[in-house]
Image (cartoon, rainbow, N blue to C red; front, top):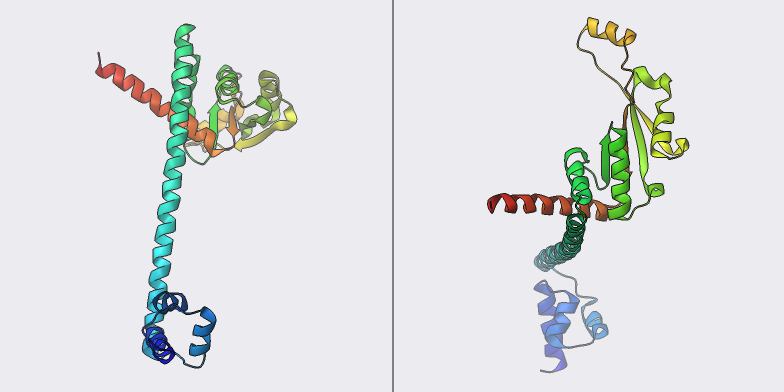
Length: 241
């Protein structure tokens, strides 16, 4: 095929909606040569429509391929994370059994009942100071997060704000008062009598509640994996009895 025939073929392919890179694959000419041949030959309406259609389809295929690749990487990461969590779960459960206590599994169960289920962070809330102390030790031992890296927030009903309950939680948890954030919990009463009683009678044992938060979705996924493994363990145990 001589040069004129190759040039005519390039024009025909262009008007068929092929891009420069696609044409070069067909006729094997340098891009500079192709650009020179086609620079003064505009696409007709049909050629523009075909080219646009092919570009849109190519973009869709590219986005689909990218989506598949991202999903595959995510699944791979989650599987790797779950496998690592399962190994730790088995080690810590064995440690509990050897020492005749259930420190590890008790912490998982407490999170299961009182842990945050939304967002991308580990959260645990309780009004019981001893339970909060337990969970702090649990996190330090098994999640390897020191107390200084945990964020604390206390939730207090508006009527008790004057009692300085942040001092109580600071002393109990052995953390600086300045590191405690405070949220006011407003109460909606259902009747007038309840309102009048609430203003005159207060619970002397009320201390509000405390929430602990640890940033990082990886930590949350690990603890959720432990939770699922604990559920599976007891389901299997019950099925085998």
